[in-house]
Amino acid sequence: MRILSCGEHALLLDLDDVEAALGLQQAICDAKLPGVVDVVPAEHTVLISVAPGTTRLSQLAEQISALAPVRASTTSCREVEIPVVYDGPDLLRVCEMAGMSEEALVDRHLRQIWTVAFVGFAPGFGYMTANAWTHVIPRHSESRLEVRAGAIGLAGRYCGVYPSDSPGGWQIIGHTTLAVWCPKRNPPAVLRPGTRVRFVRTC
Image (cartoon, rainbow, N blue to C red; front, side, top):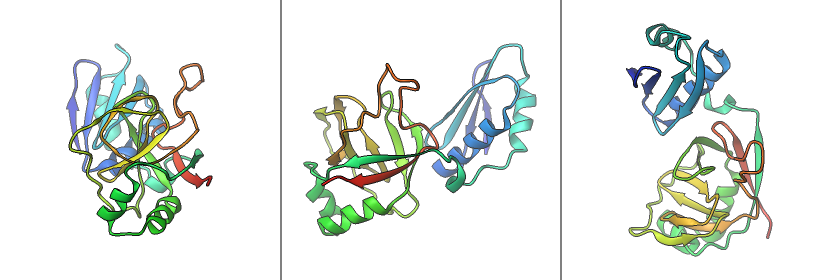
């Protein structure tokens, strides 16, 4: 792990992979370190912001170095179920890429316990990983101009649910009626770092 200063009031932790970033993010949140006001995980980094005048960054770096990352399987007890209909326009293409039948791919997708590793691209868009999901699905070479909210897609090793209508290049395998992002809700995002997700087929 590399610990880098990021301005006067933040540290950027550079780690090996997404599992390490998620595990350390949870360890930092559990430790409730003085002065820390925000902890933001990404694919292999964690950004930590502190309130001005509360703690020295050098002291915070020492405290972080002493933390043991939380194992990915225990990063959160929060679990949500997402209803899904596998009717996406890219489903057959993804099956060909994975070398599997439609039923086999759907069954494998349903059997995973997905974990939201980080959020990005758009508010409420959670990048989900699963230890037993080994397929690496390439994005479209050109993004669609509009993907409807609720679309469930695959890109690289990640699974995601589009929180709102937007352009997008992920391979769409299905959709959900669950609103994963609602600004009027508290909190507005269903999919937050550490959340464990089970997809449940509705038809």
